[in-house]
Structure formats: C-alpha cells, structure tokens
Amino acid sequence: MNPVVHPVVGYLCYAAYARVRHGRPPDGAPAAVAIVAAAIPDLIDQPLWLLGVTPVGRTIAHSLFGAAVAVAVAVAVARLRGRPELGVAFAVGYLSHLAADVPWHVLAGDYDELGFLLWPVTHMPPYSGVKVLGEIGGVAVTTLWLEIVIFVVGVAVWVRDGKPGLGLVRR
View (tube, rainbow, N blue to C red):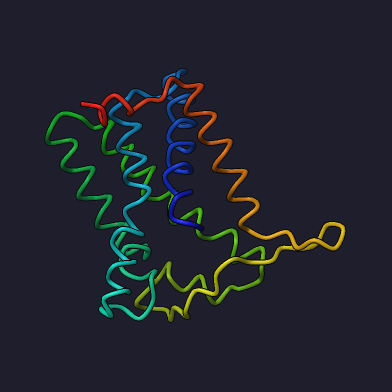
C-alpha cells in the first residue's frame, strides 16, 4: 500500500473502534495518535532500506515481532501517563498498517511477499509494487485504484467527523 494511504486507513480503523466503543467519532488526541501510528512502519523501514541497513523496505517495523514490541511499549507508556485510550489508538493505527499491507498480496496471489509479517524468520523478497487485480473493459484494475478510493472515502469520513486531531497540529 502506498505510504500516504496508511494514515487514512489508521484513522478509519480507529474511527470505527470509537464508534463501536463510545458511540461517537474519535476525539482529537487519539485520532492523531492512530493516524501517526499508522505511518510508523514505513517511517522506520523505508529509510533503513534506503540506507542499505535492511534488504527490503518492509522488515523490522512491518514484522509482527517489531509490532508487538512497539505496541507493548506504547500501551505501557500510555497507561503510566493515565491515558490508556492513546495506547489503544496507537495499537489500532500501527496494526492497521500491517493489516492493510496484506490484502493486495493475497488478491494478486503473491503470497511470498507476506514474508514481512514474520521477518526475520521468513524471507522477504523485494516488493513488486502495484498489483493488477483484473480487467474491466480491457482496462487493468490495479491496487492503486482501490487505494485511491480508500483515500478519498477516508478523508471524507475524517472531514465529516469534524477533522479530529487537526487542532493538535495547528497548536
């Protein structure tokens, strides 16, 4: 998934959680945490790959092992500070990133690219990029099309919810 779409997915997942748990859209701080947490795996792994530290751009932070550590630390810190909802928001956002990277590989049949989930136990081949999912009227339907739809819908939901988290950025 394109890095710019992950924060939107993180918001959508946390907004769904907030609606189920609290019956309303998310508050600003937890929404902001979920949005930022959803970007963290790419913010860690992509620079490591570009610097030649790791063999591909989805390793340490995209692994369930790395995620378990990051989420456990965030939840513990949030609890110690008396803000457990921020730990939940971090967990939802971060884990949404990993979950959102899975379907494209499954739909395209590129199961070997799911190796990132258990890296370094499993091998992670180089990412093959945008996947072709099929054709409609002779036009290739790719994962990029679906990501554009997710992005637009996610931004629309965020705006409808009152743009939670934006006030924190403005301060």
